Image 1 (cartoon, rainbow, N blue to C red):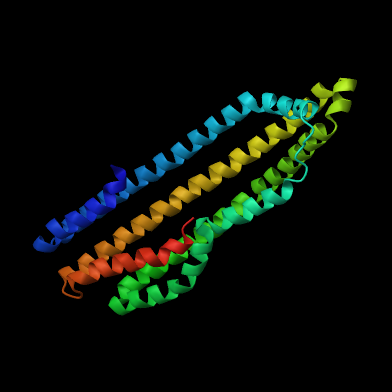
Image 2 (cartoon, helix red, strand yellow):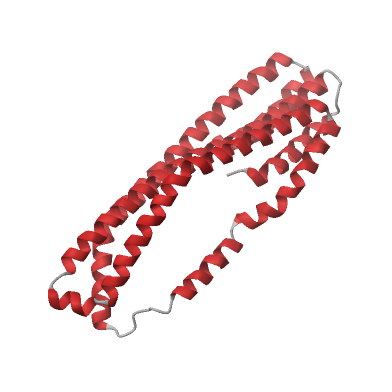
Length: 258
């Protein structure tokens, strides 16, 4: 239901605010939708944290078994998959090209044009769109700065974990003969636990700030709609400007949303 807050806000603006030209009603609706958006952002952040903890719990439950299978598998099958790294790299490139990232890069150069058009609609609408874009850019930069350290740590622990697993699989016969499987499993478990902690920290930051970015974008879109309604009340804009400015603001802010 909270996902419908923006649509219901637009409906109330057209059904109640514009016919009555009531600024107090508009202010009350702005306060209400702001509270709903804040509640939605908190719920999204909590949901992301819960899912991260569930994933960590599943990893902790089966990680040891997976490592034991990894060590024992080369003893049963001659193919150790040592030539699969190129395929993994290819999958990473393909995954990036199919992700939203490249599309956002193509949309980003159009953002100044959308902001300029908002200024042509009305200077206040342009200022609102520009402030929203700057806020989202600042939030994106803050997220990158905060996530950089745990992401670097996660990469290091992941590399160490992978190296231990690869060495264990390559030397499975030697480990089985010398009885060193448990010792390597302990080292791998330590690296895996450190990786999981860094991953959880990075995920918490990314999901929390990502939820804040999404809620901020939706809130800014609703605020532009409210600003357009305010201008219509005082006959400084036409009703069509409300929809057009809201759509353009959404398009301008979409490429920089986390």
